Image (cartoon, rainbow, N blue to C red):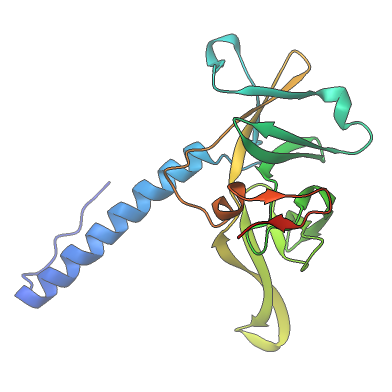
Length: 201
């Protein structure tokens, strides 16, 4: 890679450049760790892996068998005291926190739709759209190029996603790194009754 030599900068410009480079570095590192801990599905099929023996991870928990997804295409499970939902759609597995980041809605009861080229679960309570592969919240807004048209935008990652692996017909989930905070974390510590009402405060 060829580097471009910059002209001598003033002290103020140097401080600005230093701050900008620091933010860019932190953003790159954060995105790198998110991609490692929150693999996305899609064309590269990173949301699920058919693990080789040397890749087996003791922290991955068996949640179901592949045949369990034949009818419902989804399974609700508890992994290390965290409720998750695993979806099987278009030949891919994706795992997310069970409760919607917005108000704790039960995502295992949501419909799956293609929105803006992404496969999403629609929360049954308030119709929030969440991309299965990335956990991004999507919203519809005006196209800046043509305000009469609408398009889909990302709010950023809102729902925690988890790694799914398939081994010998078993479907395993490895929880993502909870040191990186996500909005859906709030509802993982809450208790809900059979009618999905949150108990306590």
